[in-house]
Image (tube, rainbow, N blue to C red; front, side):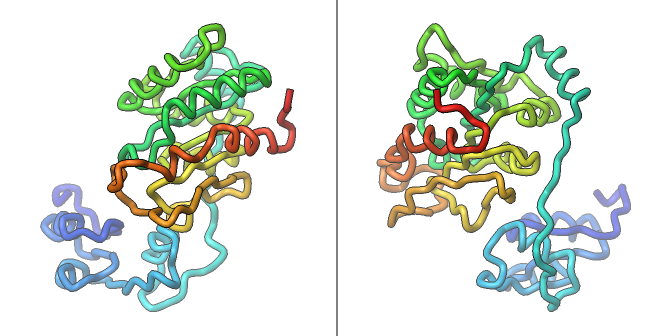
Length: 266
């Protein structure tokens, strides 16, 4: 980083390590929220007011402002665009065609299993959507491939979902999400991609908070049981039961999917 001669670094995580890197790289302007342990590492210092900035996106956007000034609102929503030509190129490269009705599932979550709706629930939802004429595609990284295979193994043999986890680049995943009738996601990176594409989206929350990292789209519908033990923000359920996601039944998710305008119920 020092060799590249950067003049400014926005330090998004609140860890010491993240602040040490630009400091040792001699980047002149180092911008971030300051805590007692980072006071000498950051020289354009913001003080975090969690009550005024409840969302992570708001906190990151605040770093672009002059310290001490209010964040302009409303916060602009992220936008992604996939053209028809881009989608056609992706479909040709993958050797697939867009079905008339397409549901895309994003069953992974890099943070850990406490953010992942159970595979058996995704499989039950896939079976139910097949009854309504939907094809189901699974998207994710190579790390999600086994999760996708588990979902496929639990679905009816005659209408298996297409497991594309690990089979696409990020740009290809964007094109496929853009083609979906709707998307069902855990709280994950692809959830935010789907929101930025303005696709109809069902976002499933367990250990994380829809108030902290919501999908920034009016097309998104959030499903959370709001149990007393959640959000715990843990990678794995500290109580061992994962009730926040196990008790989020597939029928409830199916009903939310079919309530989007233009979807079919039979």
